[in-house]
Image 1 (cartoon, each protein chain N blue to C red):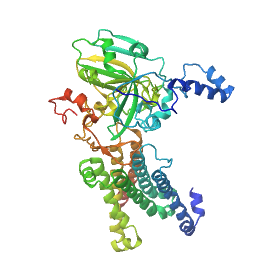
Image 2: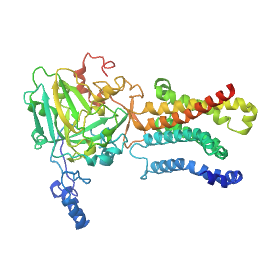
Image 3: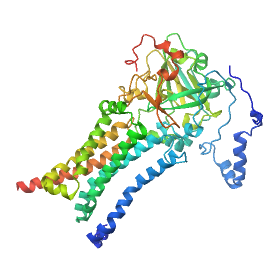
Image 4: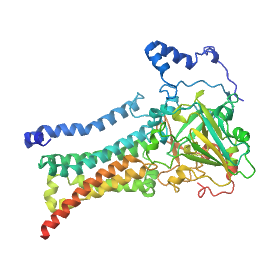
Length: 215
Length: 315
């Protein structure tokens, strides 16, 4: 992996690597859109017997996957000693935002059919939806300030501090997932384990830095 | 009374090739090698392609007059956590279950305690069709054509003693047949219970069949409870034990999350599940949601049993 990355220049990664990764990360959304298209045309499709449930879960799963992937970029680049993976971090983060937007569209439109009274009650009364919705709201400023212009406007330090919110978002997202399952289920705990490992990496780095400063 | 009128193009029921014979023909055509291997395989192994025998049953008045949910949906969209937590896991994994021979242990406050063979407990000559609404606690619903007998007929056979107040049920819990038991999703074995008067109600039903045939494994073969005025999880599957008790039995989902699943768990649009609203439901096959009815629309038959009870407390 390291040697492959080393052999490709940053320029080529920007020119070819990015469009490739972009297309790959778009695939789940393409699959979903295609299958809803079939469903609306009363054609056989891959959404199963409860399409709304499938679609809510599918978009939620991919949001969490891209969120965890974006959190894995920095540890991965430190691990292989190359900053090249960082070229993809913003794109992955924005894809997490894209899929959470689909997640909400799926719930609000396809599942609840814009029943605002019921939806508002859900957000306020159902803790797991409150938690999930909070995570989404926190992700909005990160998506908005993801451009180079906003880094300049805020200053690198403040921008970085703001984007530390992603840790809270990751935690809220995984809690949302654990809470919506019935009984004691293994799948959400796998996500929780990966998130814990990624956060532990940050804590360890932070402690190392502190130690270095104090000596 | 339901009068069936036949159109000229309709074949009589007995001229239809039975599924057993039909499938056997297909198997012969599929090649002698496969058929030979199937014959040689020891019968202790569950068969992947279990042939569901047709069941003769008379029709009864229990019919909501709505068209049943397609068989494919009823047999492929299931909650049966012993075979996995995904909706398609049971259809995928339940072939491991061996539904015959089957016996049910009957104990507790009864005059006829014993381990009954399924055929001794259920009179297969007295089967009836019942088309019931099924409302899952997850806010989806189906219309299911069951085949079976009233629960009361079995209770009469085992003779509850005068002190008996509740009926407790238990599902098979065998790791060899049920891969889902590897995970502690619930406190296995799965248990459920009813008050004795609920169990004696006309609606309370023991199903051995679905769509005119034996129950598929993923639907709770060979014997399951059906209590249509309660959320689906009360209708316990693959029953291996029936006990009469004088105290309220512990039930699996209530143990797992007492705030979310009460002992009664009657369908009630006014009492929300803490995590989602119960006001509406998605009928499988429909796009939007419809209003959920109190007691799943069976209020005239069951509401009396809960007179004077605060149903928001006894959820």
